[in-house]
Amino acid sequence: MTLDDIVRLALAAERAGLESLELSQANGVLRLRFAAARPPAPAGPVVAVAAPKRPKGVPAPGVGRFLHCHPSTGQPVTTPGQRVEAGQIVGLLEIGPGLRPVPAPRDGIIGMAVVADRALVGYGTILYEMD
Image 1 (tube, rainbow, N blue to C red):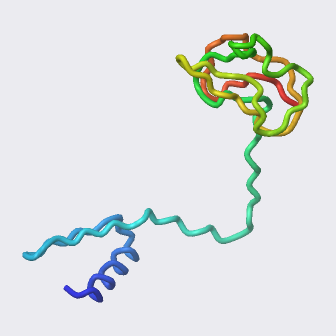
Image 2 (spheres, rainbow, N blue to C red; image 1 turned 60 degrees about the vertical axis):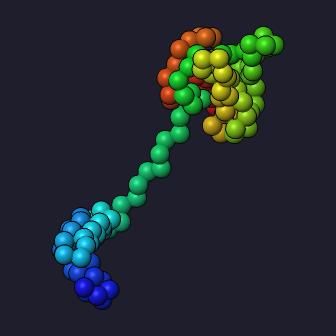
Image 3 (cartoon, rainbow, N blue to C red; image 1 turned 180 degrees about the vertical axis):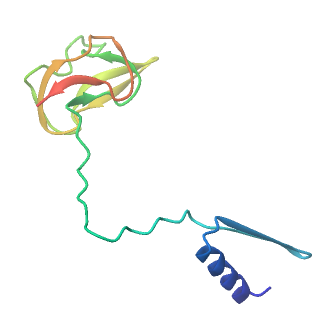
């Protein structure tokens, strides 16, 4: 089987909608896998898709115990009414012996804490209100 034969076979299999093709011959095996076919775009008017909603507050970036204050200083990481920038650390997650920073998802003003200090939280749990 030549390279041209393989190319023609691959094109024909892809047009037929196959996900994979395997040919065995005495001198070897040829396996072809094709990317999942995308359905054709619907003809007609274009429909606008709404942008994903931003969280209304500061979501937890993982699972752990939410800390309002840094354990070594006892000082709050942030306070209600404080203006923060996207990425600024506003709290901490205690995960075993380690700490993971909780970043602000966008620029804004931190509101009240939604969960208690040292509460066990899951990924995406809203920790602070944010305007």
